[in-house]
Image (cartoon, rainbow, N blue to C red; front, side, top):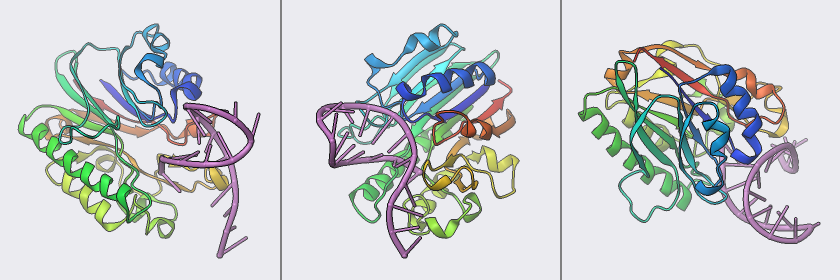
Length: 260
DNA sequence: ATGACTGGCGTTGCCAGA
């Protein structure tokens, strides 16, 4: 079961690049972030004609997440529990029925948090507390599950080309990193780092200042696996190459393969 | 040292992103 995460930065602007990548990478499941679309305007037919079931949790102009799946989905839920007043569309989950194993798949778009300090940073940290609570519940189920998406967290300095440039940014501040570690340390496996220990692997390159041409990137898109999912992992890769294409997102996909 | 690019909304600029 190949499960990918991709912050597409707008479904309307990325429809062509996204379907090109889907046709080549052929993930069974893709969680998308920043669809920047309400559910009614999401071009579901583009994906349904490729055999994907489409589940969206959209919002006008900003944020918005979705799950595409060629495998049957059950128990789709929208929104991160813990704050009924939170109107930002940043969380969706569903159970994917594999050939012999079901996997609970959570797709997330964690708040950016800049400028820090400030209310946006407070929202980021509060959101991460809610994420931790949901993560604890996933672990208690003792089943294959994963949380994949744009975490907007640079876990360590080696996950940035120029860590000094991010030292005071909400993506890398000590409080941000600590909140991320608190989630991972509950018992999750950070999929990419479990398989690749070397520095210099990124999932985001800014559109500005020639960041891609200088490989001036950061690694902020992650997949966290429960122990039962980690036991099934056979691969995890970043599809770096598509950042160099026409009209790219500023993020690239990261994916895992699970023997499920 | 600074600014820079893109998408959405909507209109010729502004907000947000990271």
